[in-house]
Length: 361
Image 1 (cartoon, helix red, strand yellow):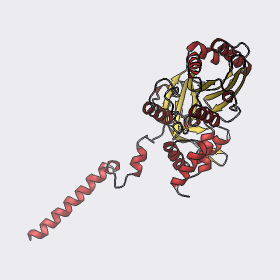
Image 2 (spheres, one colour):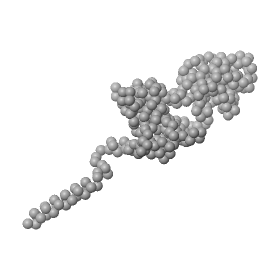
Image 3 (cartoon, rainbow, N blue to C red):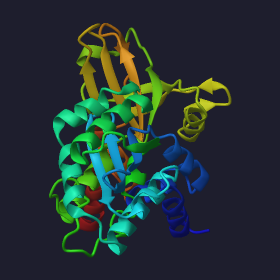
Image 4 (spheres, rainbow, N blue to C red):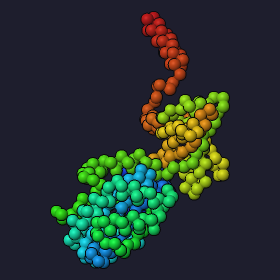
């Protein structure tokens, strides 16, 4: 299987875009399964809230999909329908996120939902007060209290649909960035009255740029790491800067941590081996004065460590641009000792004098 086919296989099986698929396949040496492990290990920073509702007295039925960014406390994406047709509430919200989204969009394309009520629901959901109520129901970093969420949405339906006893079902699902935008342009609602399913009034070009920047800057996998200390020759942690290369050990005991440690030559059998990493972020923690340092090992592969400011860290001679220099063809004169150059010039000068002496005889 050639590289292109492996990239396509990873794209289709994981939802990763072509840019990162290529990087990951190259990074893993063509190991598609290993690349998929990296994608699977990516933190699920998003939750899809999938809702079916039935307001039998006012005869409104529908489905709602809200993708929430639990880290930044925002609504990343939203799809919804409200209609007098009971088919609108028959979309199975136990389906995976992609299928649920697809069926809502297909309904918008093929049916003629009540866009007035749909618009009212959308407007109410987009209000900051409603978002605050939703995020207040987070009981863990990645889990909502479903019963509490029901109370929030029942109050919403009571106001917008004037239905006091709506029947509704709520399911949640952890999703990652790639699944959110996988095939995002596959379906277009061909209806002049259809609502815009993107965030706000953002154009497709602007959205594409935002997605690319977001994808390229996130960490697919965040590994636990620790710095290599050097009390004598090391640099004080407080003097570290973004872009510096330091030696670290990957101490992540998860399966993905073990896999990546071996892939990066950071583990020899069961022994941890120091490897070089570039500092990408340094943040001082207000409560302890310790430093949170994030380093990069490869495309989308980052390490995170907490360092006390008084320790000294072993640095690495590796530089961010050194990889290109190492792979450049030709002889690099900048790395030659100047004394050798002077010695060679003296020898050449002596040879020239001897040659001139014999020619003049």
